[in-house]
Every structure is written in structure tokens, then in C-alpha cells.
Amino acid sequence: MPAEPVEESAEAPHQSLFAACKELTKPGITKLVTITALVGLVLGGLHHGVSGWGEWVRLILGVGIGTALASGGANALNMWYEADRDALMKRTKNRPIPARRLTSGFVLLFGLAMCIIGSLVLWLTSGPMPALVAIITAGSYILAYTPLKPITISNTLVGAIPGALPTMIGTAAVAPGMGFEPLGDKIGLTLFFLMFVWQLPHFFAIAWMCRADYQAGGFKMLPSVDPQGNHTAAVMITTAALMIPVALLPLVVIPELAGWATGAAAVILGLGLVAMSIRFARSRTDKDARAVFFGSIIHLPVYLIVLVGEALVRFWI
Image (cartoon, rainbow, N blue to C red; front, side):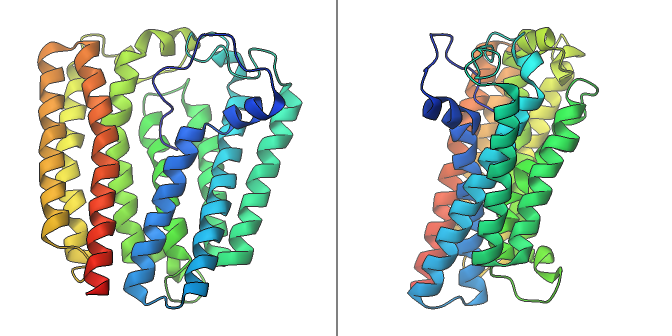
């Protein structure tokens, strides 16, 4: 899943059960994951010819609710797994388990229930393949990425996989084919690569700013073995630059839906992210790393709005 926000409140935490459960789901991440799944659904639906308001409403509600529940559950399980390490870090010490607002057992059951219910919603409303993608996403997040965080700096690349997979939940709901064929849908794979690459400069910026906190928690991130920031800066520039060709892929994959507007957004936003990454490479300051972080946050929604907006306009025209 995409990385969590840079900071969490150090103030007195909310005491209500609802607030604590909401916090378990990491609402910011869950919202982003749900939006990317819906982007995949809309682009895939337009390309593959989904018709009828009833069909669209069923798919949008099913994919949206199912993805949100499964994502929220996976985030809760992540908090359950990392509770001891969260207690060691300033930005996470007030999470529900370290702050003793919720028990570890409750969080485990809550996370599992959310994942199961979300997957069932996807299965019943959108088919088995979207549910399978949600299960794989949650499983790889909890069973692969999370355990690797204190072991190897390669965890970031592994973590980008469950962060990118939700786009395929939407496309798998509308792609034609029998069995596992919908998982090979070209739109789903295109959006997967887009989200995979986007997470890298985004997360490396976070890892640089929070390097002391990650070290206190025992997590191995690139900046922890790269104190001067040489490799971190190089990777940030490279992955930011990769965003340009990856964001241009829809012009090749779905030319009837993506054109000059999407192309312009890909180039302009990508160059901006590269420029911010170069500035960080020159300064190695937290301020410029934060600029890359916020630049990535601006890049993705603006690009997706342009991509989906142009697709809708071209479809209706």
C-alpha cells in the first residue's frame, strides 16, 4: 500500500471507539487506494463498453465499498503487526495499540473482518477476480512487505506492489475473458506500472525526512544505509523521470480515450517532479525532500483527473 503520511498528531488521541477504529484504517491511504481502483474501473469500463446506469452504479458501489473495506482491513493488520515498533517512533506512538486505546486482539479481529467483508463485497458485486486481487493485495502487504521492513531496504520495492495492485481491482471487474484473463488487461497493467513508479519518489522523500524515526523503530530504509543521501537522491531523480514515460503509456494503450491533455499533464507534472528531486539532490535538506513529497501528492491526483476527464469527454463526444 502507499506510504502513510509523514506526520501523525502527537496530541492527546481521540478516545472514542469509532475514532480509534477509523484511525486503524489509515483513512488517507484507504481513500487513495479506493480512488485508484475506481479510476481503473472507469477507464476499463469506457474502453470495454460497459453500458447502462444500473450497471455502472452496481460496479462503482461494489468496487468502491469493497476496496475501501479491504484496504482499511489491511492497514489495521499492519498496525497490529507493527505495534511494538510503532511504540518506538514519535510519529506513530499514539496509534491505537501503542496508546492502549485498543487491544491487539481486537485490532487483529477488526482487520481480518474488514478484509473478509471487503473481499466478499467485491466478489458478490463485481466477480471473483476483483476479490482475488484484493486478497493478493492485502496478503502481500501484510505477509511480504511488512515483515521485510526491518530486514532489507528492498522492502520499498516490495511494498510498491500492493500499493499498485488496487488499480487492477477496477479493471478486473470489467475486463473480458474467462478465468484469470481479466488480470492481464492492458489498462490494468498500465495503471499498475503508473502507481508502482509513482510510489518510489513519494516514499523515498518520506524515508529521508523520517530517517531518524525509522531507525528508532528498527526499520531498514535506504537513507539508513545512505546517510549522505547520494543513493537516495539518485533513485528519487531516476524514478521521478520514469514517471514521464509511464504516464504517457495510456496514449498508446487507450488512444481513443487518452490524448494531448493526458500527454501534456504527464510531461509537465513529470518535469516538475524531476526538478524538485534535482533540487533535493543538490541540498539534501528535509525541506526539499518535503517538496518532493508534496509534489508527488499534487502530481498523482492532477494527472488522474486529467486522464479520466479527457477519457470521459472523448467517450461522450
